[in-house]
Every structure is written in structure tokens, then in C-alpha cells.
Length: 285
Image (cartoon, rainbow, N blue to C red; front, side, top):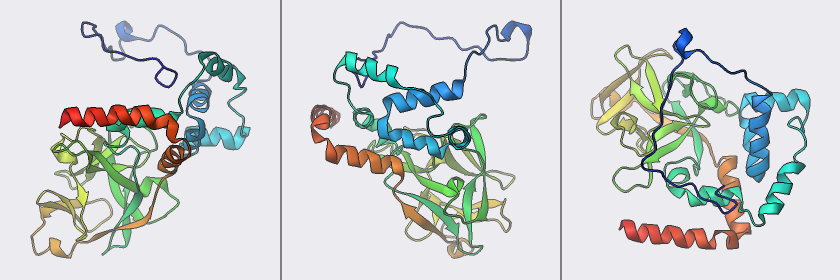
């Protein structure tokens, strides 16, 4: 709707209800799933995101289908092109990302760089234990593992807006997931939670400093002696001054490469939306 000239507006008096499946007869599903939902999701991506559909290769549920069924496993897409032609003048997906800059740029979903985080004393890297995509439980675990530049679960990037100025960034997000580092718990495990894009969550305000400290304010994260344990300590403590983390395999991810490429090659598509964003910035000041 957005890229082809429409808008989605708020209905202040609307009401939304959520019903959770509890296992009781009252909340049981009363419909049957029809069709191939993974294929349908892929078709939507290939139809409306253009070059950004390359991101599907970063998610096993799609990449595995492509590997076993071939490049065109999602079927014929000509009907989508007919819709675009009829609507006459749809913007690119990069335009949509720019239109919602406050989410995609300012909250870190289009990171300038992704990187592994290596703990120097062990030689191991910080690894998010979940898979690509959204967490089914809303949380996750973090351990140390052998550094591997080809393993996406070892990559992190800056995420969440800085609550003081609304710009990026105030936390550390596991790449291609909805999870941000929250630190260690009482049992010495390190955890993640669904990223708070506004940056308001104090427990997600982690930063990798140039000094090599992984800090949240005056508190730093230290490796606890085995790959599954971590501790919080004052960054100024004698024991923590020896703890050092470094960024490894730093590079720009494909989504940001494509985003910047689109703006360079098709500047006219962004003229009006950039003017709109400048107006918003002036109003916020």
C-alpha cells in the first residue's frame, strides 16, 4: 500500500483483542491451514522488495527450499507485475525503508556494519543461540563459541534508538533476529530479549567501547571462565580491567549495501520523501 501511493492511518477508537491458545477447547483453532505458507511469504518478498529478496538466503526456512527445489521454487510471479502496472508508479522497497527511517535507520535495522565480538582471553566469540528470524519465546541465550566468519549467529550490530536524541544506537542486536543483548542473570547465563526499538529499555543499553569493554553504563560484562557463564562487574574494578572484547570480521551487510545503492542510482525516487523527513526533523527540533 505504501509503495504504490496508499496510506495506512490510525483509527483512534478501534479496539483489538488477542486470544492466546491455552490448550483448552475454548481457545482451540477452528480453521485449517491451507496452502504453503513459506512459499506465500517468499512470493510476497519477491513481489514487493525487488533486490532485497536476496535477504531470503539468510534465513534457512527459505534458503533450504531454494537449495532443494531450485531458484524458482516460489512459482510464477507475472500476476504481481500486472498489479504493479495497473497501479502505475510504485516506489521501490528502498523508498519504503527511507520513508520509515525512524525504524530502519535510526533503530539500527539497516546497520552500517555487522561484526563478531571476540573475548580476547579465551579467543572465542559471542554467539546468539537462537535461529534467524523472530524468537518463538521472545528471549534467547548467549554463549561463547569458536569464531567463524561464515556463521551468522556470531554476528551483532548496533541497534535501538538512543533515547536522548532518537538516533542510532543504544544497544547490541543479534543480526537477522529480533533479539538484543540484555546481559547476565543471577545464574551467570547471558540472555537476550526482543529489541526495544525506542531504546527505553535500560537492560538493553549495551555498547562495545573502543577500550574493549562491553559496557552498560558503569557496568561491564566479563566472561565467567567457561563458555556459558558471564558476570557483571564495575568497569573500574581491577579484575575487569583485564577483560577485553574486540570486533572481528567487520563488514556492511547486503541489506545496507542494496539500500545505499538504490539511493545512489535512483535519487529522484527519494526527493520527496527526503524533503518530508527534513520537515519532520525541523518540527521535532
